[in-house]
Image 1 (cartoon, rainbow, N blue to C red):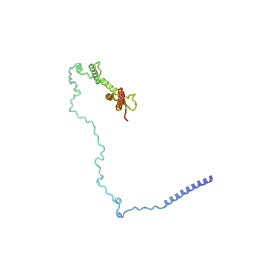
Image 2 (cartoon, rainbow, N blue to C red):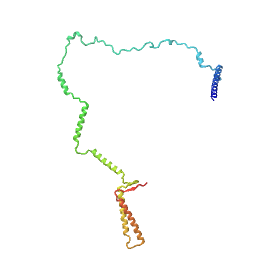
Image 3 (cartoon, rainbow, N blue to C red):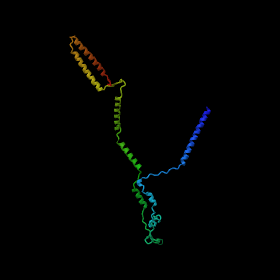
Length: 258
């Protein structure tokens, strides 16, 4: 088995070597063949038309005009000269009014007798004292606080506290009204007080009507019809009395229609 495997491996290498040799010979033959020059296609319509590029190449050079040798204006003048920003000193030799140093001895000095101490004192009294803005603002704040304390009536509850107290009372009442009763069974709701009183009044009215009908029945007659009417009225009266007991409670729960 080992010899067969080695023989197969040598054959593969030999095949690869032969394939590379064939490829090399093919490339060499293709390189030795002269490649034909492809003739560009040209329409017969433009066969006698010369190329524009050929005309421009064969065209003789145009001589330069004589004006081309002249210089342009300011081409060699250099950068502009910056003038000095400082103006020239004027000639004041003829217009000066200052006396020369030689004549200084003849100049008379004028002196006014002013009491500068007195003048400064008067100006200091008339000048207003400038205070910083922070000190002025603090004085205004203290003045407003004193005005509020003087205008406040002691012992009186402020208006905002009374409004806040009323708001707390309303919120507590709404919270208690919206809190479900722990004794209420599931699927029921508490009957409002007004509706309970209204139903209780109707039941009591019905009770009085049933009692009046029972009192109108004949006492001596003991027929089958009278006995049936009496039994029906007694059952109706018992039902109404049970309903009155229920609706006489402070809390009545009714089933919610699903």
